[in-house]
Length: 455
Ligand SMILES: [Zn+2]
Image 1 (cartoon, protein in one colour):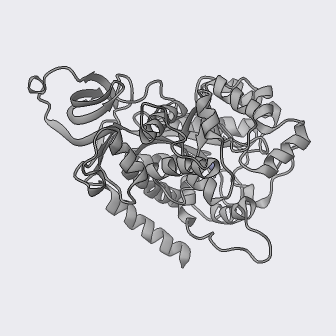
Image 2 (cartoon, helix red, strand yellow; image 1 turned 90 degrees about the vertical axis):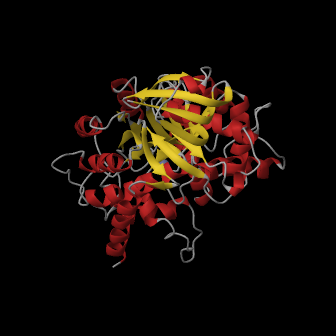
Image 3 (cartoon, rainbow, N blue to C red; image 1 turned 60 degrees about the vertical axis):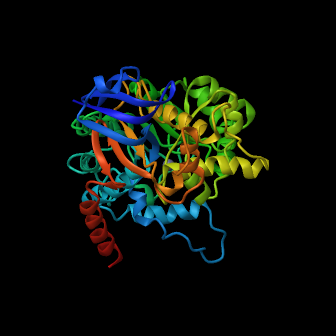
């Protein structure tokens, strides 16, 4: 239980001064912006401009470990997603459960320091390096849970179902043997992962059929049926080659085929959805599913540009994720999303929802979409939502002289520095003076691990 007075806060009614909040077991139980502050005297006062925490709706935490190591062109051929994937597979083959806990902890520390207070971990490295199951089939999942215990991030764990190496049930390759399940072994793994995540306050479990290329229609329907009611995330239409393969295999584009195969609703999160036609945008927007955009990774991998302006105009829900974790930053994900639309359209303020500023519009959408994708019923500073608060430092030079929505615009568009001073996740203060409380320990583990890998 806890309570605090927020000096300045972004509430559903807009910016308010002296907002009282109370919480219990990580969830907000009261928000009061109307009682005179002297009549409320909580021991804790959160200074600065407080905004709700944002859910990072897509992460593969272990990939943080090889960030910066794939920026060389291979001999001869063009580099693209599929060559990057070979490098990623090589790295995925080497990591132990303890390694994963270390890698995930640093990724989560960086998320929290940038304003992400929860994460949907799309977790697919399940088995021993030789492909055999660990004694506890969810041992790798449990490593992600341990990291979340250390960092305090809100965890929605999405054990991935991965069965095939391509459309038409192509066999998987060597590089994928740590990922592969059938429906029975997945059910055991999912149950064990559910027990592990239940040890975290506010921990949740969902499912993640990896993609249409790795999961056939029968499996997809079985998974959606068996796990109804929780978050379901799927990679979709990230690559043009994937769209072409899907057309050959099914006669339909990936998003069309997904909607033909299962009932897509608000529980779904469609990761990337980069390559979509107007009819697919309309279907996604009408379904209530969240489109999971990962602009930094999509740019890094040369995926393409999602038609976010059209999707937003159609009332579609969306949020952002850090995916490959090559660089972890909430404001930079939002900035690149907007700027990619500007570059394509040769125009400004593409994602603005007047009268709100562009930064505010982006931020509000990402908070709402992130929460929905992580399986939360409520978002923002409202009763029932997670007690996730991010305090921006109004004395930071980047925010000097800025007020209300311009604070968000300055944070997102106008600084390379981090003006996040304090972060509370699930009612626990985990970032103080811009630094995660466990950063020293987590960083030491990280440095030791990377030295071991490099050695
Ligand atoms: Zn991904």
